Length: 446
Image (tube, rainbow, N blue to C red; front, side, top):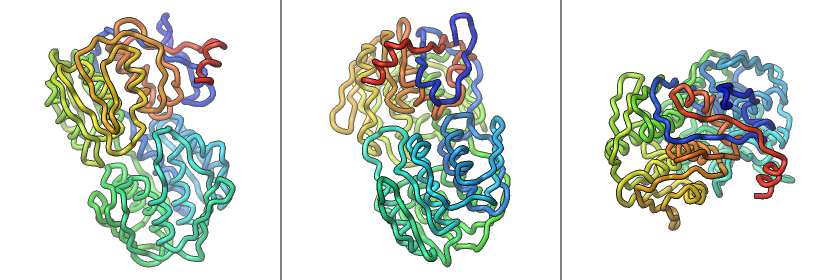
């Protein structure tokens, strides 16, 4: 939002947002209602899942984010007809060809690896460049490949692309060595049209996996046990089109809940599933935040004298790694020493150096961040290194004295629909400015 109250248009995380910086003037209380969008982590799997159908698939409640745009273009690149208007997308997969996926778009988005499972399930072959997305350290896809090979695919790495080939796919018993959302979904996509029964053991239980199973079941797939650690899939010969509405985004909701805990007077978070947020709200209540939950809403009031807490990220239903960075910011205002341990991603503390620039007393030891509080935060020039780090820095800016300048805005646009518009509606002062030529060069070199 400019200082005159206007909100500049942008292209949802493309080349334009590479040229933007986000300005946050801290110290303004938040009040009002915020509506939560559809789940990003569902959307990026549901759109590839549409490949498996023989007729049109309609998806509602899509978030308006750049990751969704990237996947829509990927489907069009391989022959799909895609109509995308607002939060609705219709995908006609009839003319899709099993051609190699172009590296350019794939490198923008790690979740493009779901195209592997969907294309393999549909055509018994796929070729895809190595996916990109947030740089969170090693997140190998060895469990995905293990699953594909168990179903009968031959997997090779040729000139930086992964090639999958199978004469036929046959159901198998697959034990995941590591609980992985991506591998669980990708194996489901590949297995729904395989011959016979596939059993995925040590499967992930995230709500987004249930969402993917729901659309596949609506297409005619036979899947049982989703939401438990053992999923059973009986292959079918064909899948039909369907209509599906995406669940609310629990990570977006959690981000705004933390922002409200930091600066909220009276904030209502609307369109949520409270059960999906229990690990977060339990910790916030332990810290002294006032929270009341309804059927699909949550009321939050910031509380003076926050208490320190120890947090360890775990697979669902444990504390979400995607909320580790935002809550680390809140803990800088809690009295005492807090420890946040991330057991999922080794490199998810890149925001700590940026928080230190703003005056936080935080140090990283191995997989843990040690936070001493409360410490007042001061506005500074900081850089978002990934999606959730960007959200964390926005929350820090809301709390800080003065103006915080955030570059790396394209990361934020990948996963948060209309972030500044939603915060402005609550009373925040946040706007975009164009980077100068010198600033662009500085960002590129850093």
